[in-house]
Length: 274
Image (cartoon, rainbow, N blue to C red; front, top):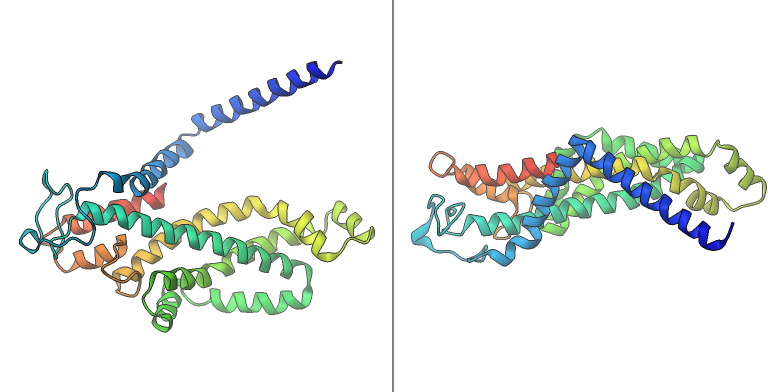
């Protein structure tokens, strides 16, 4: 068979694979719905700022607590700031915190889980630390860390990363322990491959699937926890907008200005469901 024929066959196989993946994606209503919701939320964060007439910090005191109108699509807050602008920029901060925490916990948790699965001494030490951290309710632990670190956005990311890393480490360790007993890993060990080579070149790639699944849950949990921290006044500091601290401002006037809690609440729900 000629090289040209083989090349054409490969191209056809790739087209069929792409077509099959697309059909599976479109037939999975839950996945399709979640993807559309996330595209909307991410679109609000990335494209929304180009369509704003007000900055999220611009205060017009005489317009405070104005209901939704043509001038202010989502109304104004108790300082006269445009709520639509604050929700849009709040999406950037809330999604940014969730993404940063998911990435940091994935990387750190992957390393901890892999090392713990291969070295018994490290396993006892690292897993006991993880057990101790996981024994503390996440929100209480995050509040305690924020009290020690101070209410800043980067400190929210650090605190939530500490809270959620043990979860990733546990998942990776569990998967890696089963993989290290596989025949091909034993063969690599018999050939004299170094432990680090075995861990990061042969075990790590096979832990990616459960790692990605867990990271998506942590992304959603981070958004909720950041909102809870900000709602309690221990998260993203004002005047920087996040969905949580918009809710914090809204709880004081919830009966007079329903829009201050409804719209950021809807965005949190959409981001978590998506």
